[in-house]
Length: 181
Length: 308
Image (cartoon, rainbow over all chains, first blue to last red):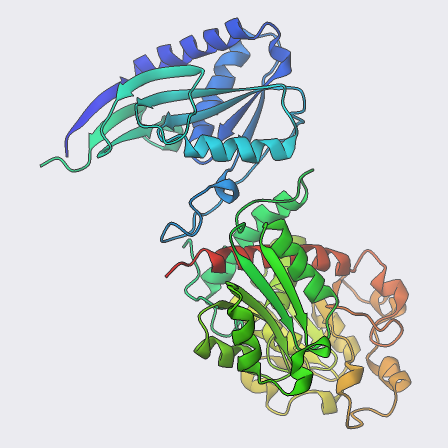
């Protein structure tokens, strides 16, 4: 199996810092903003972003987790139904600026489901999307990210694997060829 | 484990403990959904479910219907009292006619034990047993054990007594299976005429004295005296039943440890349980009803997700 390292621990740290600076730059008043990490893999990145933002800002940033399982469009089209994860949105998102966070943006279908899941908690004034890796030219749905850690051009046969130390192990983001012979 | 090994929910008897656990974990998520401002998810939006009730029901039917609607399924209701069954149509013909209208799932209650099992052998749709005669009532047992898990943290190792008409109760049988599979100790208590002869074969304790039973247990599930099934005189009078087996406040107050009171409804107030017990803090009767919707959503969601 061939694999290429997209980001290592040091580069990831720099990328997260840059993303936080961009967020602050775009939000004149960050107290109106909340961040929502998408289950299951976006939550670790969301926690990292919150931690970095808390160091840069006077007030603590609100963080929630959003599960999209019941809103996905591939129910009954998979062999096995997806197992839901916990949704934890302990605040109102009505009239807030919501920043959705996920690790990889690929077809855009998860984000569509997340938008659906999110509006069950109220009507935000604005929604933005932050992703660590954007797989270019692979969208099934017209959805784009506002903040991107790294853009990569990938084949359908390739896979982006995000390993974060919160999941055990080290910080490494890989691009993997799944059918390499 | 992320899916059930069965296409139908016919009873608890053939479920594995990890399947019950999967239903509980899925129900946790649906309970969360039910507490949101918008209590609806679009998971089953292309599914049609028929609620086929050959026997009367209020809460089970409402609970199923609400669960189906919260999952965005299309729902049709059928009750035998206002249908062609009265004209002599067979069960299979009735259900096949409903399925010909492109129905994906059937939730059925029937007075004959085994009716849903019979249907499962003959039709393709997913079947959920909502009570078959005196046999099983799986979703009730799931919501009862789920409520115990919610109240006491776990079901394993807990002592649960089921009080009342065990002979005619499908709730009792399904509860015994579910509690045992999850590792609880089960006792049944009631007048000897309302206890099945070989109930001990199921591995449950039998106690005839309600006071001793309540002293032993952590949870008491008080069953309804099924007035419609008392064709023979199993006990002399309701007053005498209530005297010997009714649970009242004074009895609960005299116990060394406080216990949790459950009841599957509908309550005959003053017969199996007095009003002050049913409305006390010990009772989790309304929580059971609330959990019923979440459990039924989980069951329908997991069964609908099985495509093969």
